[in-house]
Image (cartoon, rainbow, N blue to C red; front, side, top):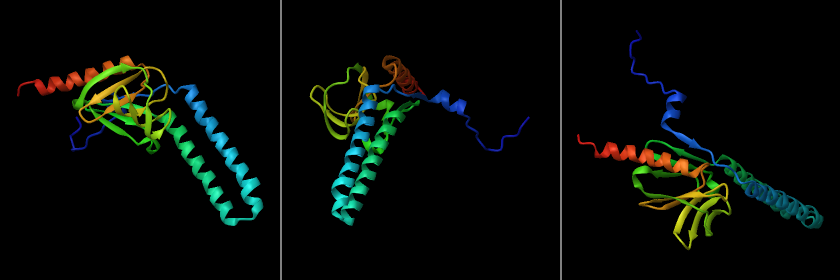
Length: 195
């Protein structure tokens, strides 16, 4: 028999029992749009650099244009990476909406603050911050302000909390909604049990 030394080992199997990682499906249309914009801007900015700025002999202009190309490439490669690496991680206490800083960074939604979860079509909205067709902070005429992390145009989930609203597009939204509600019921059961 091994003596307990005070060390606790947490295995990946144990963690996977506590968390559900939902990797959403990426819409080919959204992905192609970002790939196309990246290629177009790269070619367009390089054209301006080679045929407009460089022939004038402006060293400063060449440096600025070169840095602009690098910056645009960095932003769009980060957007594409964010699109493919978006995850919704459900634990016993919260949902972590994992995105990159380009669209506002990760958001944590505490299960005990959720007032409602509804299946929804992705509504038309006005982007206030973030990346079009992927996420950020939006205003929707039908529902108001919401944090969005979407990777496709399919049905999603509208999560309303005491603090904010969130629109996400998990793979199999109705199943993910059930998993969230199961976790919420467990929390409610623990809270309502007499001591």
